[in-house]
Length: 408
Ligand SMILES: Cc1cc2nc3c(=O)[nH]c(=O)nc-3n(C[C@H](O)[C@H](O)[C@H](O)COP(=O)(O)O)c2cc1C
Image (cartoon, rainbow, N blue to C red; front, side, top):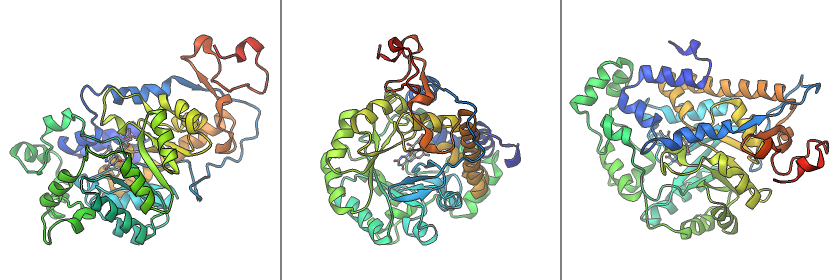
């Protein structure tokens, strides 16, 4: 299997599996506990069907959308993902470049290996920056300050990690801090010579460069990772962290990891400009609902007043379309992009974005949309609703029999 034979995201995951040692593949792919949230994230999209309209002129279809005052080519982007350099040295910047090529947002994690300074020097237009609240609030402040000085457009505060989930695959594969090349890991690497060669020749354990300024001068990669591990997660953090970031950050601010409509309202009260409805890709609370299940409730609570993004389990163009129908302005995906860059570098990341762009384009043509603003409740059927009734608010052009348009 090679990059040319990849035609969907599952193929890309297979290619990555063939090229990464288990410790790396499982870190990306895994969930927590019994991985039920992972499965739910996919099944959540299956609950909805797209209802096509025909005999619409769909020769011209545009995916363009405006997010926080800036136009992007499509209503999707790449999630923040930490320690990408472990999967391929330089992966963060490769993801940033790939996103810029397609004019899509790339959300750089503060736990990345390349620094936000390096990303902004190369890809200033489409790079956003994600932070966690830290135990020492001065570090959060420092990260915000740096983002401000660099002219980052959008800042994201992730709130769904008060403690780390139990990632069973990491426990089995040998992934732990401080990172060590144990005999077991070396054995895994033997079967993946490309990864191992890059690992050994490009500096070994990657450094979380965003954290270097907060470590002692000359600190090793493991010391910096330990500092990161001692500062995050910060289980004592409260809404105060959002208020503080809001005070220090003048630009668009998103809160990532919101699932409860009441939390969504609280974010709005505290001045957030948008939300990323997310369960961290099923990597935190295994019993959490799928974000797509919560999106309609959150849209009801704050829709219209805040821009909503969603991630976790988005794998097809049709998933993007469904999320837009339910009130999202855009979607994000993580693992497929990481598999792409890990398996084949920047070309792999570009391939993933290209697959999604083309799938969404075909989906729009099938459903009868000329632009993403055509998305709405009338294009969707919720198969869980009693008697296959339409989603709340849909009138299908006022043509429904009266008894069907009533909410059951
Ligand atoms: C390898 C990996 C690292 C991640 N690191 C972060 C991170 O540093 N910050 C964060 O907010 N979310 C992080 N996430 C969660 C993603 O931002 C996102 O919520 C999730 O991957 C979306 O689900 P998907 O991978 O199914 O598309 C990470 C996810 C993965 C797979």
